[in-house]
Length: 260
Image (cartoon, rainbow, N blue to C red; front, side, top):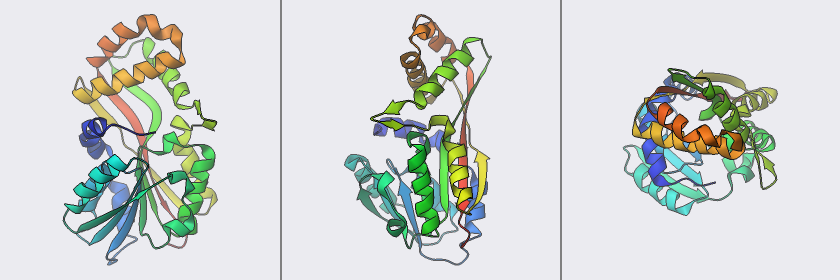
């Protein structure tokens, strides 16, 4: 699955506000005086995770290895990251689910943002095994939690949320996506391998802005695709919810392998 640069740009500010800085501080405590830091960013998109995190690592030199399947996004990410102070960047095009401990060897951190819910249980287990096998910490942010709160609330909210969550868990080309089950699956996978795991809430908070309108169109459309009986109510529901306050819940995760 690939995403338009325009959508990634629209969500970047909300993502930056939402991600947990507390987990970053915990990671920094494990890498005192380590320089340069080598960071592998999985599903990097246009590089928003790197742009957010690079300035929060104490001013140390960093080398980012940017992974994605979309060469257009990789080009944008490399250009933007190479313009960040104290940062150099290179790219890797390919299938993120095929990475092994050998691929991650020598890294100081593996990151991703809004990726885990697009993976299967087996893929999350393999990713956790690769990180732990390489003795590299993992900071995985903005995984969909399956909860949206609108203010004011209305009865249809639950029906659309349930349908959207079911859509997130759909089977695509034989792959059963985790959707909102991804945060718990990742936590369990790392813990089973002996890693210390911490999580933090990382919600978007929006009210009638461009991000909310664009996100909501996709959210409602996916719900209707999953549950066509919602279609007659969708247009008016979308109009009303576009004017409400919304809290879109996500989960951030930091996993520290036992050897770190």
